Amino acid sequence: MAVTDSETVRVQDLSGLGVSGQLAWRNETGTTRTDSALTLSVPGLWHRVQFDNGLRAHSQWYYYTRNGDGWVDWETTATEPSTVAPEWQPIAPYEVHAVPVTASPELTYEWLNPTDDGATQSRDVPVDLTYPETAMAPQPSLPPEIELDRADNSTTANRFTLHSSRSLRDAGKFTVYGLVRGRSVNVSVNTSEPPTAYEVNLTAQVLNTSDAGTRLRVSIRPRAGAPLKRGRIILTTRETRVERRLTPADGGKVVVELDQARVRRGRLRYEPPAPWWDQSRTYPALATNGSFLDTANLPAIREIIDFIVITGLVFLPLYLLLYGFDILTRGKFLGWYEP
Image (cartoon, rainbow, N blue to C red; front, side, top):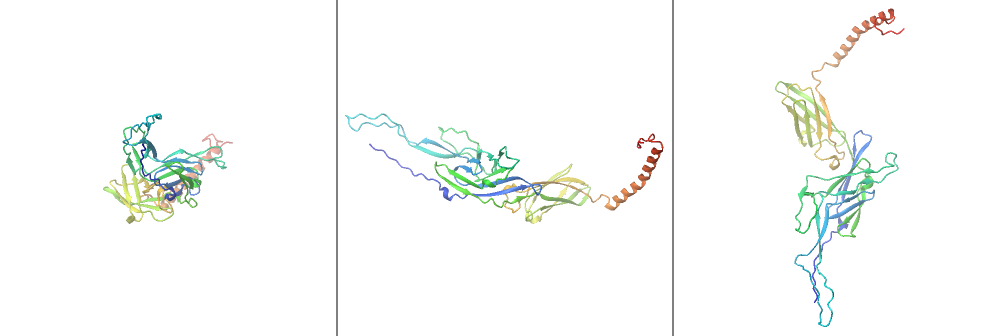
């Protein structure tokens, strides 16, 4: 007796995998790049990514095998009474199922290869991986006989980002391996001209103040690129903390009203709507801290200069007189003069 069964298995075509990526720099001083980030989008059910610079990442997708429903142990028997039946053998085909296990892709090798640079010649540089935590979903249910140690939720986003204190330009070439063994595709993304992220310029001006409250105008200007249209502004004083959303209609300026009289100083903070490595701007914006001081009620610069001059004219002759008397007493009067 012959028993046959068939099942159509669909394998993802890795050759048409729509992989994309963007490398960006973080620049705090304007001269030294202190951080780099490579954001990649790898859709579909892939197994792992092997980067040319030594990094290796595993996706959140794993697989398990099980026997198909309805199959039991089968035993073959002799076709003729005079023949000897072969040994008993179970017959049950395996099914392979893909399932998310971890919360996101994870680095299974997280060190950059050493370079000839003097700062990193004798040690490797670690790399971190982050993912959009806002795109999460509960794990799908499993058959009761399948036991896997899984995260409670797994990301539904295709994107993840590599972070390092050293250049990730060499991570632009890598190989994507599929869940089916032996299937892979070589991929490269453009990392030749990464954008540079900068902090923004924050200023605040007191428009009016009274016992009822204070109105300030906060200005947010990028150091490079187009005007900022979105983000969050946080203004903090000793008594108050106010948050405002920046919209395209604001033109980079937000008026903030405080239930506080006579605000003299405070702290400012701008938070972009997305991390600097995940922005579409030509020059991404960094989260920036600043401060402000109300100079409206301070003396004019001319008054300050006059005060310094008058103070010097008053105390300089007195100092010379005392020093001269100390010379006459050969240092016994004040101890300033040493004969």
